[in-house]
Length: 293
Ligand SMILES: C[S@@+](CC[C@H](N)C(=O)[O-])C[C@H]1O[C@@H](n2cnc3c(N)ncnc32)[C@H](O)[C@@H]1O
Image 1: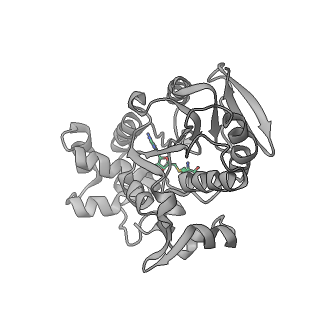
Image 2 (image 1 turned 180 degrees about the vertical axis):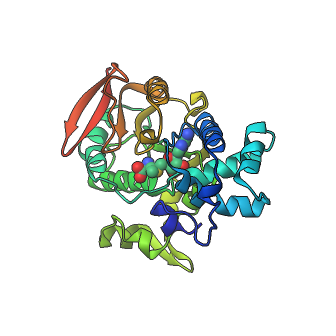
Image 3 (image 1 turned 45 degrees about the vertical axis):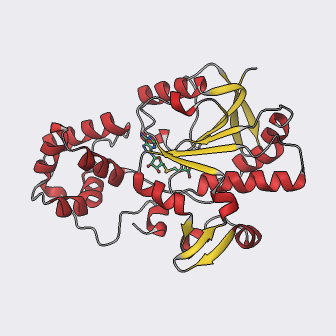
């Protein structure tokens, strides 16, 4: 999957259609149940076309003639690799550099100055990092803060970036982007300073790449092994989930926050009615959520 198409949330080039007309209502329902149980993603009633276009290539390459055969194999549940491949294909990986701007402005102007007074190394989690633009934007923001405020932070914050999709994680780890992806949200100065031209495009400099730990994680599963964080970016992922899954994920994320820590959601997302332990703080054109001390 090329970075630019993934970054735009598009299906891979050259994929064949699974034939929307051949997806029976029963198979569609069974597929939606499988997808929600394994990833939290809720498709809604009439996304047969999306399923068809995203899974055409998988069907072809895995040797299934009919969509019903794929559904049968998925619901039997024995083929883990196939289940992962299908979930991977169904994720929407739309992302960009410094997406919406205000979270990064808030990090630089409000959160880092406030949290820098402690002696601990800060920990930041990008909880659905897609192809890496979000955690690298966080790393650039921290670097810029450190340049402007030498010695203020107790060491480099630890950045952990996770996603359910192994394909986007591989791209994120390489940190290589084509011109289209580079054109979405980077100033010329940041481009010059934090990227080097390589054969396949532009690569994030090693000094930033080595600051980020990329790991595979399904948000429906336990976060216990990740430890506690001072800031969690959970942006533009819970919009695909049911209210029950959102409530469950948010309550477990709150448990993963250190006292005084921040949760940052996507522009169109809110926690209203889902958690009463966080206080909303308006910042620029967006909001942040803070856990009490
Ligand atoms: C639209 S992208 C958002 C990327 C980034 N956070 C941003 O705001 O630009 C959503 C990401 O969530 C990931 N995702 C979907 N379901 C997930 C799950 N159950 N656990 C972890 N990540 C998931 C997808 O693979 C995708 O990369």
